[in-house]
Image 1 (cartoon, rainbow, N blue to C red):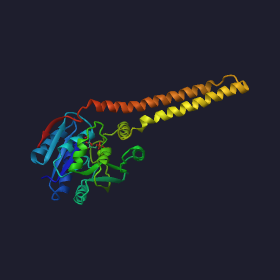
Image 2: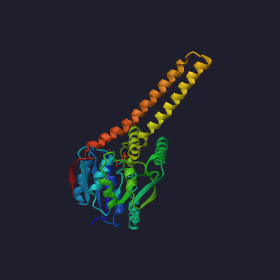
Image 3: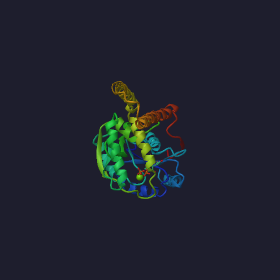
Image 4: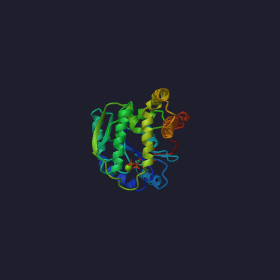
Length: 307
Ligand code: UDP
Ligand code: MG
């Protein structure tokens, strides 16, 4: 039986295929028996052909090619579902997740850990803005989510077979993997590491995509933002009640004429804003509920090689 499956999602990584494979072979040889599961996430460059060339030479190179680009979460899910090993390691194709750590993860697995995650101790490869936003995200997430998530831990990790199967079997379409990994639990341990800059090719994450990714994480881990507005509404209504009493009092006691175009405008604009934000929050959840109820599969497979 294969001991370790390496799940590697690939989207337009033609330069990285040979680099990644050479590096991984160099490091993994002799530690344990392993297989590669390369998931081609609808690349529109030569990634698939390059992978197929490899697969012809090595039967332990397996390919799942998706019918289009479904995103990294879906690609990883496809890989987890297909993995045959006693343990599964998920890593990026761009060598940002050091392959040398895989034997270390494996040792931890042998010691009985089932959820061994790489934890970045140094994010100097990222820009200041990215570091700052990432830090803020973890802070907010851990404040609001029902299940805390370790800081600076990404998708780079080893899962035991049953943990991997559990993650793959979670039925949701909105797959915020880091959240799901911590949700399944099991005996977990962190392995600190330094994340490297990308070896070749380009990163696929724009800030807009990251923002939506963060929203997806937060909405899938919380429901209180939906309920908050009841109380906000009550507070506002109470305030309006007191304010009305104050205006009536002023009129009766001092006979002040009605005044205050400016305050009226500010109040209207402020509460219009609050109402739109409320609608927006509901919309965020609603759109995700819509995605879930459609019950479409997380990905479609076009082709499998060496399975
Ligand atoms: N990836 C993917 N589908 C996508 C985007 C990315 O499978 O739609 C893969 C990509 O090929 C790489 C990994 O996910 O192996 C991480 O992507 P990237 O390096 O762009 O992300 P970053 O390192 O900036 O988080
Ligand atoms: Mg990368």
